[in-house]
Length: 222
Image (cartoon, rainbow, N blue to C red):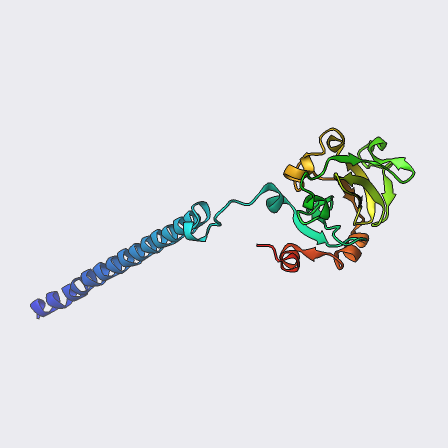
C-alpha cells in the first residue's frame, strides 16, 4: 500500500518535467521566429534603401537632366504675336518665370545669328528699371504683350515680349554687351527677363501655353 502511495506521489513530478521542457522549447521557437522576422525586415529595408541610393542603371537617362529640367517647368508660346516668334517660359516652383527665345525662334535662322539686343523699347529703357526691397514693391507690372526688348540680326529685328502678365523683376543686361549669349545659350545665360506673375494671372496664361512635349510635336523636334 505504501509503495503504491509513493508511486502516485511521484507521478505529478514526472509529468511536470516534460511540460516545462515543452514550454521552454515553445518560447525558444517564438524567440527564434521573432529574430528571423527582425532579420527579414532589416534585409528588406536594406534592399529598399539600396534601390533609393543606387538606382537601376538600365533606368537612368542617357544624359543627366540639365539645371533647367531639374528646377523649372518648361512652357512655350509659339508664334507669340508674330509668326516665328517662339518664346519659352521656365517656371520655378516659387512662381518666378524666366522668359527667353526658344531655339526655333526666327532670329536663329540668320546665318550670323543675333548681333544686338536693345532694351530701349516703348516709353522706357527696360534695363534702367531697378527693383529693390524684399517685396519688390517698385517693380513695374506689365501685360503679356508688353515689349521687353528688340533682338537684331543682320537682316531683321524682332520684338520680344513678356508672354506672361506680371511684375518685371529683372532683365538680362549682359545681353547688351554680349548679345552672342543668345546664340550659344539662349535657354541659360541668354535668358531675356525674369517676371513674377500673380497666381491667378499665371493660371490664365498657362492654358494658352504648350508643354515641352507639345512644343516638340508642333515643331517636329527630336
